[in-house]
Image 1 (cartoon, one colour):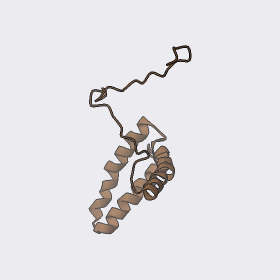
Image 2 (cartoon, rainbow, N blue to C red; image 1 turned 180 degrees about the horizontal axis):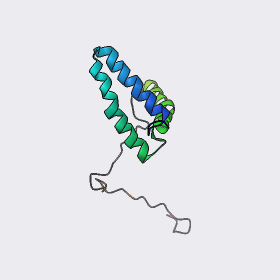
Image 3 (cartoon, helix red, strand yellow; image 1 turned 180 degrees about the vertical axis):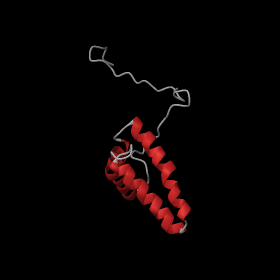
Image 4 (cartoon, rainbow, N blue to C red; image 1 turned 120 degrees about the vertical axis):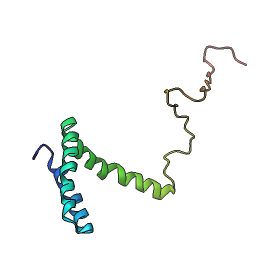
Amino acid sequence: MRWGVTYSALLANGVVTLEIFLLTKNLLTLALALPVHGVCALLCARDARFFDLLLLFGRTRIPALLANARFWRSSSYSPLALDLPDVHGRRRTLPEVVLAASAHGRAK
């Protein structure tokens, strides 16, 4: 760690700030690095591996998601309709419970 952030956060901060500086050609945009560094320091104080996990997510999940969307031409893994909970955590519809015939039950 350097100055309260990990090297990957420091590198990302430097790259983003320098890219903005090169695009705008304004020296004042270099001052943008200080608040961005502060946000990175807060994130690293919460979890020191935040940026490492973010990079790992970028290297593993994002290519998988893009490959899935390219193969199926959609962004869904399943053709099933999902009944997600509402804001209060309750299901919108009651699930249908299908009881299987038990082996000890009467034969029809």
